[in-house]
Image 1: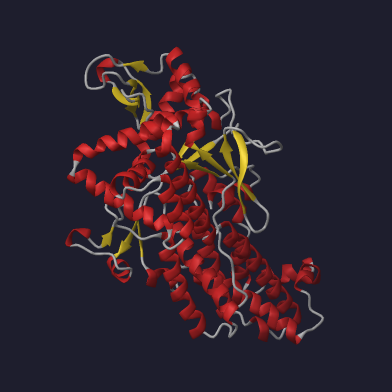
Image 2: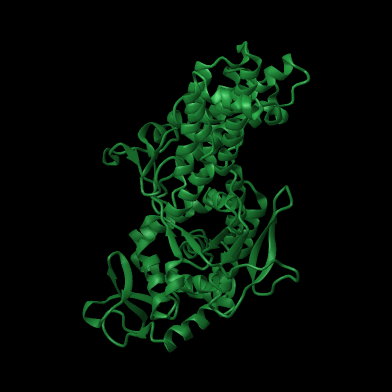
Length: 520
């Protein structure tokens, strides 16, 4: 949604998905395949090709199993260390399994995200940050400028570390007496996540002096290509990076690490870029106990009204399962309300309503608020929900459609020409002028609200605006009987207002990633 708002206001934006394909989670899944399940590369390839189980679901369960195994057998953590090293060095069967697993998971992720109208421009793979020596180059720069130092004693002996302290919530260079230390390179030579992230962000701003190769990874149905970083790219690939501003969309638990990245930028003399590197932090999502039970998740007495998810514990809801359940429930509403008798249309409408319910429920809250999701609340057709907003747009369209059916010569796009300045002035100065002005002025605020959302980095501003506009229009509709208005000139003005508000609300919903069914 934030990308949509930025583009709406004329900014050129790249939506990048950072693929952590050399990190701990991938290593743990590979360890699970190799050591718990005794699978070879061929075995994993066969499992993926057979399609008997969803590979991403299989890996979710395996990840939880290996984490439990580590807790029961701490010595097994050595397998993780070995796997991380092999993956970073791109060496042997371990590395090949890791590439197979991560690529399959990314393809599944793209398919899931498309279901809720989310797309990407570039998949920035961590593996290329290492194989193209992005990290080595960044490492040399940081050593040369003294941004990091080698620890030859103490608990971090053998590691390359960066010293910093937090001042007023901002990471700054520190004196040894009051420093905090973050390991950038472990004693075994492997690079921490934050080290690779520093290199990635230097590239984002065009500060690294190196670039990826790029190759097509996926093509959406409308022809848009998702590109992936590569060691050897394809001729004619579009350019990426060299940004003026970057937003790192990652949850609040990563605030410390994002502060480390900013501190590294300042230590390297890139203060302006540090200011323009925004941590677009968000809180986690939980489930109401009612919702969790419905999805088959165990609820304990410690959950305090909502259930938090944990991949390591295998406790959570897979996105596709949640979307499927929302669609099932939306389909019941579509059939109950007799929106259409056509089965294909019913399925399309149910998907649109389900996606609207999910997206609006997540977007209406501030980024810093823990969201507790519930099916019943999200799918309500009344109140502050996505379906309510969709219904409001459909209501406006129905007014124009019914008027057109009674007046075959009517063209809604000609309303602006049909309503003269004099008519409009009289309309606005009449007995209900205050109502009309209020709705007109509210409908004119989308651009300013979008600018507010960008300045505050709060997409919720767009969601709240959509709800206010929908509420105002529905209140207006109940007071002014547009289709039964006896004064023809006044009716034209009312219809003009319906078209104005409907157009604005439709554009607003598009910013929220919400499509509107033909009927509701």
